[in-house]
Amino acid sequence: MNLPEAFQRYIDENRLVSHDDRILLTVSGGVDSMVMLSLFTRCGYSVGVAHCNFQLRGAESDEDEVLVEEEAAKYGVPFYNKRFETAAEMERTGESMEMAARRLRYAWFDLLSREHGYTAVAIAHHADDSIETFFINLLRGTGLRGLTGISAQIGKVVRPLMFASRKEILEYAVQQRIPFREDSSNRSTKYLRNKIRLGLIPRIREINPKFTLLMRRNLARLTDAQLFINHGIERIRGEAVESRDGIDTIRPERIDPAFPREFVIYELLSSAYGFKGDTVDALCRALEQNATGKRFYARDRVATIDRGAIRVAPIAPDDDCLTTVRQGALRSYCGNSALYYEYLSVDEVRTFDTPPNVALLDADRLSYPLTLRRWREGDRFIPFGMTGSKKVSDFLVDAKVSMPEKQRQFVLLSGDEIAWLVGRRIDDRYRLTRGTENVLRITKEIL
Image (cartoon, rainbow, N blue to C red; front, side, top):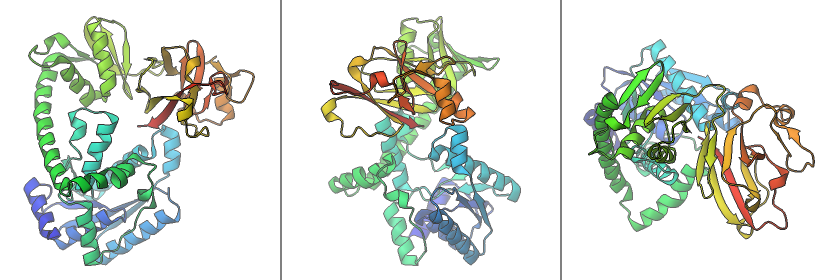
């Protein structure tokens, strides 16, 4: 493949940018973004370079910054650099590293664009990134939208390398002697994306060497199908959704009976408010049972069944966000996190030394259904390793938990007893003992 020609052709075919645009290139120092910088300058575009130093990898982060600044100077293009206090921001908001970094950098890109007149922002995602996103969403559970991969353009953000594979980009960098740096975290299998990149996809390629090309075509067809659905859902939204005083009301009876009602409700709730598929499934079951008053939660919205209608509103500060966890459940949500449940025999537990985001509970001591909610003043539990009870409020103070984190703290209850102060400490009454036979392992992941 002649990469510069393919690059220009992809831009033209998808109308991503023109030579009249001023394009802000987001360059990390990795091979993808360094090749993108080379291609844009080689093709004669007017560009500037933005580099984010998230200060999470010590000297590595600083060396990335130096390389990008040197390359921008070599090409004679403007260079902008920002050092973010990412760790502090994660503590303040409770977001994952990925979410916090994403929010910080896109806000900065928007600011730079307005201050310096950039009409487009270019991101160096490529075809393999899109394929990995497909598998991440597939494994976590998703609707069709989650299987469309990464879009080539959303607003002023463009991704002009979506036509190329990681292998093709790397080969071009080596051929053209383009310097780049390798992020050491890319080799860690701690992250799901890396497990897919380093483990799953190479095995699929052994079965079908043309896997990347095949998946590009599959993703294009899935994207077309989702665009068709989006158009239909917006028409339905205009007929079935009322908005008043900050509350949206979905009227299921206004959905054409010829349409799959549960699918339409899923699309309405997921696209506009971020409700997850299994939450919508439970909501639809409650709707069938006319369970007026039952509530279901997304990250910052609550949906309430109200006499056959679904009312969606922002979560109030004093809302407990109470949800029920039935025996056999695989996943539930609390605030900006998901809890994943695994049911094991004690012999299947490989290690009993777990991080705070993982709880090992004696499954036979639990009383179902479990209850997941925000902690309340007066809540008490017996922290693992202690014999006496302690107020949750005192535990959080002793642990020097910040006020924003306290507001996001959830507890998991068995009957009226706290079994886990989520993400921090289990209750000693539910610890594993020599008599334990069955184990409930719960893993908290920030979304």
